Image (cartoon, rainbow, N blue to C red; front, side, top):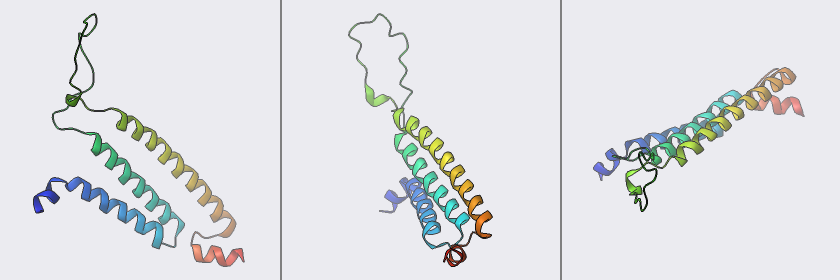
Length: 126
């Protein structure tokens, strides 16, 4: 059992990062801390998907000298799937855009209410 845990230490790190981000989003009352927690959570998910796509002994899916050869058989188990990496690049772009929009909204909230604490904002809204 301990070997199983040690062999998959990276997954445990991602789970810990996800829990830190989730904890920050749920329990913190400051909106900046909630945004940072959301960013930590998103980063953990991206790291998790990238680690799933890696393969020991795998190589890039580039075929050299394959032009003009007929009946070419390729063993796909020797190659790394590039799709998760490409999708995570898109997720990183979305994460940065989400962070930028969230920070812009926080600036507007601070200008209007003078604070970023949830309780004080709710009191001022009533």
